[in-house]
Length: 345
Ligand SMILES: [Zn+2]
Ligand SMILES: [Zn+2]
Image 1 (cartoon, rainbow, N blue to C red):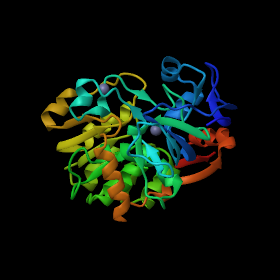
Image 2 (image 1 turned 135 degrees about the horizontal axis):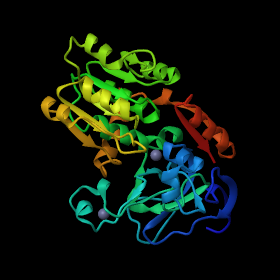
Image 3 (image 1 turned 180 degrees about the vertical axis):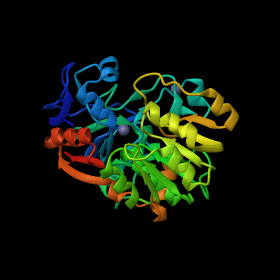
Image 4 (image 1 turned 90 degrees about the horizontal axis):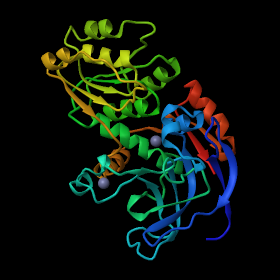
């Protein structure tokens, strides 16, 4: 398709981003072209926008930002046979090599040579985006595009919470940003006995409560470990989902987990973290690093959970803004007083 489109772009190696125009992307035989209907702001986008140390090492401007989205397929390459024009799609944002051992053994989520949409290739803060057909996830036609756009981070939450048993178990979610909030809702929907939510932001603890957290704890106000031990008669919590990236919080989870508990790590600390391995060993804890979404097992789980009616993540979408207002969206992300912020191109 000829013509230009509006985009939000990281134009230079410095903080901020600009609104600009660009050619509508070309697409190969195995690619599809999508008209973006909704694209949500991820923590990663905020990192790129604020130009933190990670972004400085990873991003090569100019780059169209954004990766979480849903939209309508308007063209398909000559070798595409699954996705059709008119389909409503979202996408797995990890574009994997399909050649490495991990890809070939059902573990493509930990591909050794993975490119990420909006990070390594042009992304979705745009009117149009081109992606490999294989990455497209076809949505039900009546799924709200905003909800469609947050399935990718919801997949992170599902992958984290369900990397072990939760039914009938107590689950703590530490760090209640949007993915943490989703994790609260997923744990609740999957039959956790008690969901605990831990965060220093009252706005987010409020949302966590609405989504099914029975106990909310603010480490600025209470000693989280003492409080958990009091509530659980000294036993501790069965499962902790670490979504804060905070070193002190990580150590608290090792302390408040029950013997035999599971710690699933999604949060990304900015520096190496010291933990007491003795506690891990003698408590018999399982620690599990979570990257991306299992392809495409996690996506089927997300679809199934949304279809079940028992997972309501609507309250997590707190703001819908036109794409032009991306700077407001980034400010909201910075303040923490938001759930998911959706941009509409
Ligand atoms: Zn994301
Ligand atoms: Zn690979």
